[in-house]
Length: 176
Image (tube, rainbow, N blue to C red; front, side):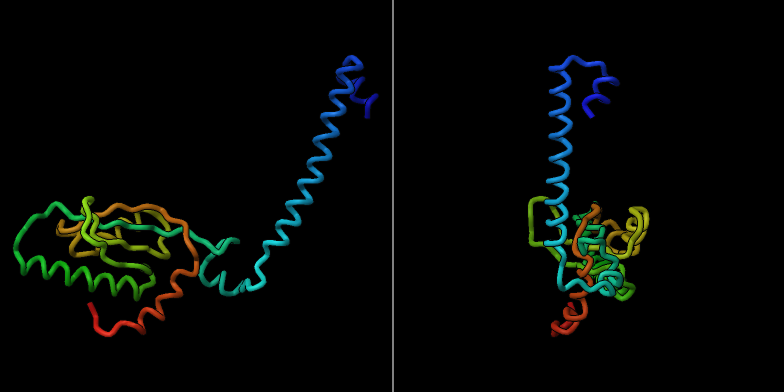
């Protein structure tokens, strides 16, 4: 190797030795660190891994997937018409239940009063694009009528998140 490097690069002997030492170091460290990573990967294999379940939920190799996280905020409509507001929020709740039934919504809930006028959150499931998420938000009567507005973020979370829904449906006593 020394002769080959020396002929190709035409280096002086001291420079040749430095180059050989550096190349040897890189070759050696790559071998060592490659073995460490191989060991690390085999240590991190989940003994409880269930391929069918991972595929069912669409999880990646880490058991995660992308969702759309929605923050609902107070809208621009400041009406005081209680009948109108009541009808809009009744439609809001009906829409939530329809989205859950369609597998498009897996988390929904209100937030406590806060200085940011954040009102609640949604986590949307099985949505491919931001445009699709925005269109889905327009099915909400409270959003359509300006009582609520929203911001959407892409969020990376556990692919098993929808699994809690069957249990959640068995623990409520009265419907909100």
